[in-house]
Amino acid sequence: RAVCECRVGILHLHAHTPASMPRCAACGREGKNADLFAKAQLAKPAGERRCKGCTAAASSEENELTLEENDDELILEENDDDDDDDEPLVLEENEAESDSSDDLVLEDNAAGRTSDSEGPMLEENEDGGSGGGGAPSAERADALRAEGNGHFKVGRVAEARAAYGAALSSLPLGDNAGRATLLTNRAAAALKATDWTAAINDCTAALTLTAIGSETRRKALFRRATAFVEVGDHSSARRDLGELPLDDSAVARLRRTVEAASGPVRGGGGAAATTAASEAAGAASGRAGGRRVISCIAPTTPERHLFHESALYRCFAAQTHPHTELVVVDTGPTPSAFFSSAEFEDRRVKYIHQVGHMTIGEKRNVAIAAASGDFICHFDDDDLYAPSYLATMLAALDDAGADFVKLSAWFVHDLQTGATGHFDAEAGMPHPSLAPLTEQFLYTYGFSFLYRRKLFPAFSFAATSWGEDQDILKRVRGGGRRVALHRDRTGICLHNQHGENCSRSFAQTTVTLDTLRASPLGPLLPALPLIGRALAGGRRVEGESGVYGDKEVRSDNAGGLFCWDSQLAARRGDGDGTLTAFTEWLWSGNGFSKARYDKLGLARPAPPQQFLERNGSSAAAAG
View (cartoon, rainbow, N blue to C red):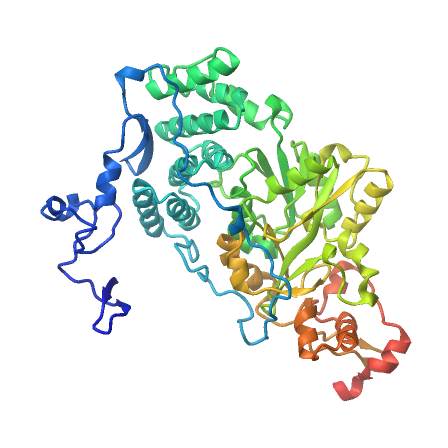
């Protein structure tokens, strides 16, 4: 498709490509405008033609880091300059800093969403950009990699990072060499954006792959060392530089920078020199070398295997905190095809499979015992965690000097109905009668727990699949440990309701999906259809079990999420009427699958008889 201007003066997309439209061989941009191509470039063969932006990028000033393409990989080089050969390698500063005002902040009194304004769940590839939705495709991954290279060469760093991310999502599972290349390329883009932690994370992920080529490995080590220098972690930079050849001028300059700050760098002479020592250090305890490893733990079951790659692993691999591991504990007749595949090579992941049944609490205990980090983070497989999630939660724990941190506000999405909301305990409950529930909401919902590993085994999870989160928090608080709270109003976590949850959700404020798309969670939203398909099955769970003797409690609020503001609007501002609707919804069973209580091994609680007499209808008549 080519963008052209029609006679009415409006830009349209037309399904043709004019034969006379010149195209840049580097970035793919098209047009005859003199501002896009120099006359000399227009005279060149199509395969050699470069737009003005790409031409300028190819002739960058001396001492500036440049990118060249070789074998589909981006190579960071430093132009030689005989006059200042002894100067240390320094990355150029970004011309403009990011504006913190761009962070998503909830507006007060957000407009409610009617049930027919959105579909019941996100469609695939609905994220709208250079997305990675759909089935894995080597061809699509190659095209997105080339798109990212083109963006990078003309300085469009954000677009390059997005394209590389989409390429990673499109890459077939077994192509670990291609995965290493894309991660290393994205790390180069992160360096240009001065996003040091993202660069470290991507390089670390690339270096865990045994299929990584020697040249790609060299680049990943150098880029990670560069980022370590920028964050002041000279010990880690020294380790990486010790594996790089001494005759590389850029490496030599970076070594001099590190040596000036912390003493001589030992080693050098190639990747084989200290590979074993480096890998051992990377797998060691989070205390080694001043590192702070966060162990993400994820209990799972066979019906969730469908989204292990697109949701669970993708959220983990995207985290910007540089030192992480993922411990997955799975029970069922067959192991996860993704995590047990011989082609899966991320050595940060520990996958434990057992045929016999274990409760959620027991799985968490097994995962903690297998974890090697200083901190444990609950990383539930059916929820989404933005790239900054671990770093944000660890900072909140540090700031409070606490042993335990969880969210006090969070976003929630109902995969059965498409409703999305935001709960905020610090904003207060919207009706006086709901105030006693604040404590319950605050100190349950274990999907957002992060805590120090040293709490265990003195504190361990109860052997149950319901209430184990509430129980552990009660005992931790009762034991005098400090629990901190983090208020998420920007979108670092999305809790999903689907009918197979252990609890349902309440939100004061309705949120649109456009709000989520604009948040840090936006790139992860294509995983929602798979989670919904696996757990919600595209159905609305509307309370078939809400029968108590000869009475049935019914609710017009389908699904597992009750958004107060939309229900209040439907009742023309009647707060007491909305409270009644909320209570009816609670006892209706809406949002839980039909056999949920049986699966949890729980007896279904019954509402007070007075409530049934006043609000229940005849079960026979309802039937």
